[in-house]
Every structure is written in structure tokens, then in C-alpha cells.
Image 1 (tube, rainbow, N blue to C red):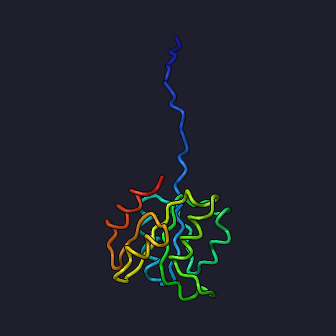
Image 2: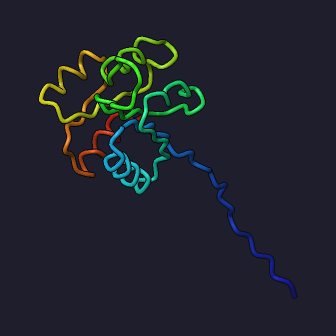
Image 3: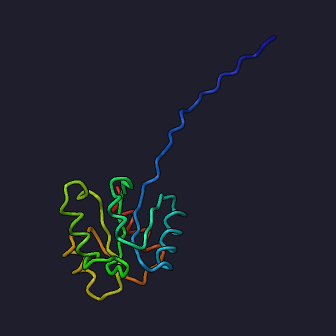
Length: 137
């Protein structure tokens, strides 16, 4: 005698991790952000230089976290200006940008740069994750 068993097979859906581009010239801060975001299952591309924005179409980020003062950037552009450029370009205007800085006028800098939000240094992991979750699509 043979027994036939039927099992319902659920299709497995591969969920693509959301990609976050992190640009901060401070390696310790960049490494902490990477660690926190990867632990939260985000895919992270990180750089200490804003030149990584030249590859934005290849990276295709869902969100950008960018320091306002990038000392290694070989131009006069800062995070505020780079954010304004991203938000003014129809090809990248849909990408949420969060500017990170320790300056006291970070709110005004973010507004001037058309950024979606700002994150004031120092910050903790919970604050970082909360602002990312709020703005990532």
C-alpha cells in the first residue's frame, strides 16, 4: 500500500534589500553607520568621497546619507550643494537625501540643500534607523 502526501508549497519571494548610499569622510562614523544599517538588513554602499555620486546610476540607491563637510572632496562643493544638485536633477530628485552634520544650523543647511531630512551628530543607532525607515521607500 502506498500513501500519497500532499504538501502545499509556498512560493518563495526573494526580497531585494533596499540600498543606502553613505558618504562620510570620517571612517569611524562611516563604519558605525554601515554596521548599524547592515544589521538592519539594508544593502550599503559607502565612500569617504562624494565622487561616488558619479556612479549613482550604477548604485541606484533608495536613500542617500551624506555628511555636509567632505574634506576629501576636491572641489568647493559640500553636502548642501551636492544635495541641491541631486534634488534638482530629474534623474535623481526622487532619491531621499539625509544630510549629516554636527553644525548647529544643520536644519537650515538641509532646507537650503533641498534634503529630505537631517541627522545631527552625535546620534545613536536608534535615531539613525528611525530617520532611515521614515524616508526610505
